[in-house]
Image (cartoon, one colour):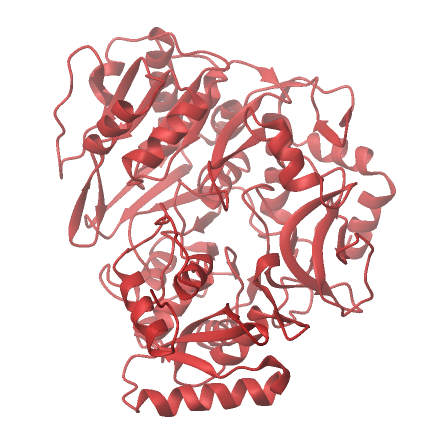
Length: 630
């Protein structure tokens, strides 16, 4: 069946369709039905089934005689090491860690915070929690003590599992002092910590409170898998709220298993036994879904990569990993390719590697500009699929289901909604708009299995954040349109649609134009306050390596380009060249922070920022354009 038939078969019988997908999962007790309506627009899936995530991700593959297959390849260009773990080895390691946690009183429903770098032990900790029915909350390794403390107070973990350190190019990030600082700041105190000591830094442990990863497991009986209800939380993942406390997205166990398993073949087009690589971090949702859970549930080999797209050691790292490990499907963020393109615009490094086994490259995390997609397609000769989803959904809302049917790619579009998602474009009053018109992107309720049923201990906030604005819909917070062929276009976050003298314009559309300039490697457009027009767009461009032309020549060309492609209505005349853009560690550009600096508003330093010093450069550029006063 092709995409249209599959989507139609889901739409005509959503519950029957999802029950059929649930057959691919090992249940201790099969659910009696798919959907449970809890009232007030709250829904759960497979709620009365009993199941264990770790069994489905590890043990069942060993039971099926595939214990010798590689489960995890840890590739760390930072340490210069590669380490491979089979499913049988993973089973014994996870059961041992789970047994040690059980001996310390961790059980079903208890929370455990995991604060780890990109090492296999991070996945083992996640799976050990899942084995016991404990609810893990992975916090990005290296997050400041204050941010970690906020999450400790919200999740109230019984234990914290951490590493002694993380590694960045040229520096060691000391994790243990950050954990100690967070525990000191937090009102809730965990009962104990488990510390995985890395040879690059051995941390001092507190007697009776901190336990060494290996010593902690010595002489302990391995733990079996504990079946949990289908609606039992598998994990909590905190996503930054625009204001105040971070939001704890809850991931339900049953739907998570069913949906992620379906995506591996149908979206990413991989078969069990093949190598799948998502170049993200376990601290983000991509790391949860596509480094840890989905590949293992589906019986693939997953890559845990401790490195960067450039500088570890060069812009050829991606190609080396794909060649060396015979990667069939590669998933990364557009910003990673922009970094590679900026460093190696002609892809000279690629000539030394064979990536012929690669079937496709998937981009997500931010808008993929056509220029980056075209460059990647040209140099690799591979299909490049943009796809769109969120921390809240855990997997693709709209994408190109290459395993079902590779649809024609339309530049600037992540393609079409996946089964489970009835995507609509709404005006401010909540009415659907015509094809081609810009509006708020919303998904008709119920959301599909595996998506968030609520926020951790914050149901009212869940309703207010996602359900209140458009009754009967989930509000995505993104703006865009759907064309005549049903292809979705994500133009911007809702708050990135700017109002210039009454015209609603997408900053994303302007970024596409700027990215098409031959000297521009990367760009961002923000809306700044203007007394006359309400808002004005302002562009920031980073230049490709080796460009030596005067900056004012390039910015003048950029202004002209936007006026040509979008029109004078955009009122685009503010543009600056900068060395770098402020980003989160996962590569998202911090546009909201840039706007606050431009408008001279007070702002809180984003916890996820990659390098705070960049903000001074942005402020200087803004002042050069007559903004960021005060």
